[in-house]
Amino acid sequence: MKPKLTVVGAAGRMGQRIIALASESGQFDIVGAVEAAGHPEIGKDAGLLVGAGALGVAIADAWPAATDVVIDFSLPEGADETLEQCRAKGAGLVMGTTGLSVEQQGAIEAAARQIPVIYGTNMSVGMNVLFALVGKAASMLGPDYDIEIVEQHHRFKKDAPSGSALTLAEKICEATDRDFPACLTHGRDGKDALRQGGEIGMHALRAGDITGVHSVLYSTLGETVTLNHTAHSRDTFVRGAVLAAQWLAGKAPGRYTMPEVLGIE
Image 1 (tube, rainbow, N blue to C red):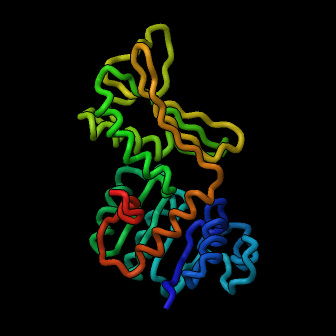
Image 2: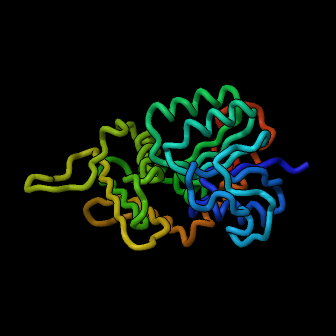
Image 3: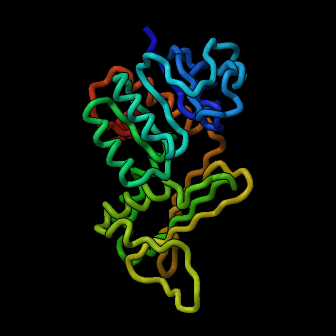
């Protein structure tokens, strides 16, 4: 029997692609397409909205009675409701919402004692490989290499820096005993902005329709090493999330990771 899937933020840019690719995969019974109350797409067939053919599931502000797994790439304002619904229904949760508060992060940890959860700031295969590499590179290159992280996204992205950029910094800090996030310098300004030893520069660019570019620069006198990931479309993230939902359905309660899903730990 196929796992029953609910998509939260179903009419958003990510939500629509999740419905389309989840339907295309043939691995799910899509039973819910949840949106905020008052959204203009409420009442429309989710499949027709995304060009996947009629699914018989309407965009709605109410949750289905039962679901096995949930994918949520919506806004932080809806995260608490998603966690509450997943706990009540015993549903696994794949959450890619960025910009969560410290309290919401704690709520995810608490929920993982009752349901299986994957929370990831980026679910693409390539980006998770980059997460695994950046700390190793920093350790191998040593403290004489300055580290700067530059992330680029479309003009509509609200949070800055991106969750993925922060994860990159966190992985570097774990590998080099830096204090995260205290060692981060967000941009530079002023007449006395000389780079300090041990800091990690963090820079967020917002322009046009850039899907996502993350670069980590390691530079010393005489050379620079750059690790870079460029997402060509949102489908890069969506495919990872759909794969995670397939993997997570039916798992025991716990906090799982994308490296576990991808087998790259």
